[in-house]
Length: 125
Image 1 (cartoon, rainbow, N blue to C red):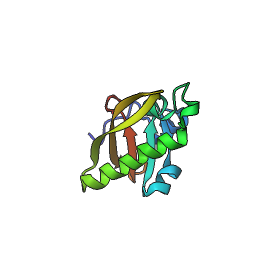
Image 2 (cartoon, rainbow, N blue to C red):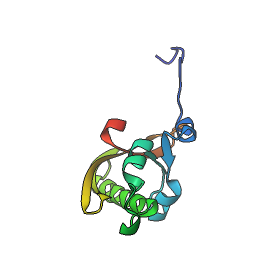
Image 3 (cartoon, rainbow, N blue to C red):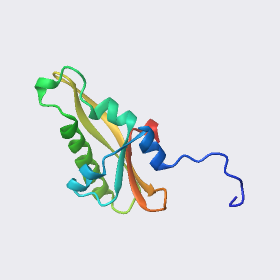
């Protein structure tokens, strides 16, 4: 298979540039992550970005992202040596209404074979 011609290749860097992946490496490093980290645009836009109407509820992208990354770090630490972990995160979606997002965090090779983390919804995998 190594000698098969490549018809199409879509790199992680291209996905970040296109907005399909959201680079959250800086925020992840502040929590303790040691690898390049992204969140899929689906997870980011559906849960991390607060829905309209929550301005007075203390909801912000920064706070919701922190919660997601912190839960990811705890789940990864409990997982030990595995390369994938699944866990739930609660997000306030409207005043008094919480949704549980089932989330997957997977570590794998980046564009140059380096370890990278992708945090996503199961259907984004």
